[in-house]
Image (tube, rainbow, N blue to C red; front, side, top):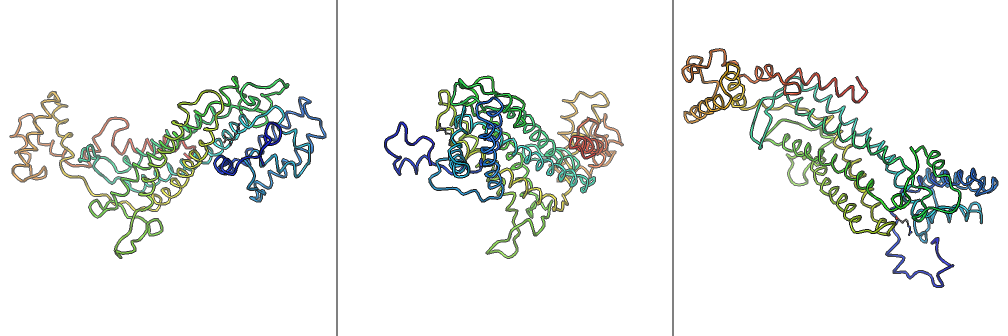
Length: 453
Ligand code: ARG
């Protein structure tokens, strides 16, 4: 059913038009669409635009539809143009002609803008919970790996010795920001567009603040054209989701490398890996690979939502219909990725390899710096020591105290201790640096931020 047939139109829609314009993706908005209508009708009753009896009938029908939506037995029909039309059609079946009063002071333009906000607000709540669960998993693994030491990498070259927990917690901090971005968006989302109508508002005495209040939102729109003609918040949701996916993708890339025989830093549970149909020995980290792959599709969704808006004049344009497919998809991708990756990480066993001996080079240079040698000079001295040892086929552990002090008389015998990775981490002072003290502080700060301390 369309909400516009009859009237202006003598002829019905062509099959080609119907097939092309109708898109069932918005069926996911059913529940929030009905909730929006319940608030709208309640407000219409309060401002005497609809009589008490009619309000009772409309609300009775809408609550029945809400139950059908929640039970998954709403009777969709192929002829429903969109979710809004389907609800009005169903309401007519349930309460008769009075259903025609539902759309008083409303347009599908403000209705769909509201539905999206309500839907995405609920999604934000779910995604925030999932992100927090993932952060907790990273903390638990950070605790489980204890004081295991790994190299930090820059340019995929071993850089400095750091606690492995410090590496895992770096992702926890990225995810805290992802969570915070979603939280910040939630309050921007909580503004009701209801009452903006088609684009310019209405001559009827609608109480837009009241419908906003009934929906638990923070307030109503202040510009009706902005309210129905903007989709920046949909794009912001997609960006929050996509940035989270990109973080998960970076971690996934590492998880994939770590379980390779070349790295051998991690073993994943059978239940969270897949086998090869051809090679019996294989155990593949498919979850991480799919997260990495799906982050590409998420970037595509975000790009589609941004591009869809760029040439649109105000206010509503049917192009907007396309935002739903993309935003639902990116949300689904994130939800699935968080669940699966949390399982993979929670059940992983980490047994990272010790770094190469050279990762303490900077520590040795800092021993000289602490004695007043300019850093650039200290860097040069240690660089020369490294290149001498490499050319002789030797490494740091081969160097004796006598030899070190002979190489440069500003070295002292105890500087040899700087070459030990555990000492390197133990000596690290910068707050937030790669030391066990910093890891302990991070874990308690993260727990406070999650409210789980
Ligand atoms: N299906 C439409 C959408 O998703 C709903 C709004 C239709 N409004 C209109 N004036 N045709 O954007």
